Length: 623
Image 1 (tube, rainbow, N blue to C red):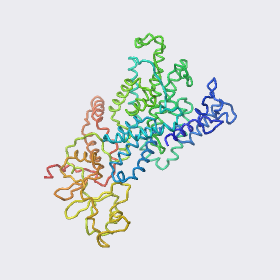
Image 2 (cartoon, helix red, strand yellow; image 1 turned 45 degrees about the horizontal axis):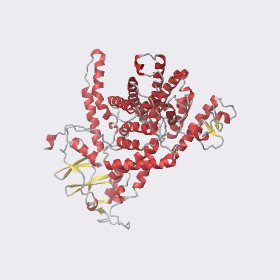
Image 3 (spheres, rainbow, N blue to C red; image 1 turned 90 degrees about the vertical axis):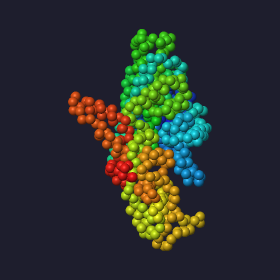
Image 4 (tube, rainbow, N blue to C red; image 1 turned 90 degrees about the horizontal axis):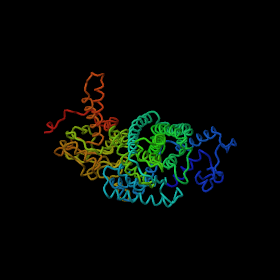
């Protein structure tokens, strides 16, 4: 499936420029395979301006056909990547296949391991990078990553990559998407520019995450009913803007391969004068414009109603910025070769290789898994140390802004009940967070009419059940499943109903979870949070001397975290009106920075518990 997607997307990318006159189903690369003329042209490849008999160089006709085909193929030139749908499809396949086995169908923990391994396979086939896929699963998919999960991920990524190599979508017999070779030494003074690239990577991540979340909120409130119109408009506008710039015109993976190349050596192709000294300033300007426009496009497009990922556009943006820095350094060296920084350069060979800067920029755009993906994509491990330095600078800048990953921010934006892996200390009992206004059932003597009324008037997936002053609970394991209280009770293997009790009343006793997770109301909140992270229950009951006092869910915990962070933020802001309020702004920035990560979207969570937390509920009241 991944090989088919690769082949089709390559064809859709080239069809915007022209078509193969001898075989329309071939892209430009395979249409011109071993048929290129001495001037670099190809007789079998026909531009759209030639198709309408207006000559080969009618710019406006090429532009119009480019916009037309880009709009019809929707995501062919949007600022999004293919790893998102690849991971999605892999997880869908893993979910469907694992449900055929009782071991995985009945265990959510086993199912999570299969989905983690499936995501590793999805990234592996998207880039031809099995080790990068395993590291992606380790970084993004699971807080707990035991050895058995790692081996499952490694096995799935390996098998998927073997199948991809057997299909050979690149027709090279290799998994390497960009074959580059850097044979020059790295100069010590170039670490200055490595730091600049790392700073850009961190600033790019912080800016994209911040403004993309604003676009996502606008999309949820205003554009949610117009997904097709939004995708068509985005594709049309992107095509209209992209065609005039040679670094935005073609597919992002193809332009990355061009930017990674060296300009010296046999068989080197100069893409629109990229390797010519007299065109250097023009290339710098075009690269700068392409970096800005592609960043804006990524901010607006990521999260639209089309299959999308953020790895490829981020790598392309980093590569364009890095190549721009490399060209500037090369121009500096050519104009001032006697400058003291260039004292280590040898006069008999080129000193600066702009392609290596593009490589570093692409690697610094995202996390550790992308660095490994870059090494596997290019087959190049010469510049491990500069890459690590650029990545560390990027991470430091990202931590300074406390932006976190974009996946974590989308989880908070959508209000998903997932706790951070970071340890937090509150020093309060779990009774501060619990719900006390509960909808409960009794283990016996409940009529069907009462049960149906509760099910119709609530949207809970389970209910605490009281029987003889003892607390019992029954929760359906998945929100997508039907409530089990009425649908699965007493069904024999032949499908016959065998409900205990009279025709009017039902005894729940034999059908409930007899060992729910229960804690004492005095237990500290941190311990309950660890239970949610490690055991993964949907609800924890609070009982004292066998009597139900309340219950707590992950959403209740997240709501309490948001409440305490807001209180702490407002109390830490000093009121200093001297110096025009500058001191207050600086102090607010420093004190708020560690708290920003958890303040973002917890208040968007909706639950049936009370919004206001009773702060007067102290430990001594439980005595």
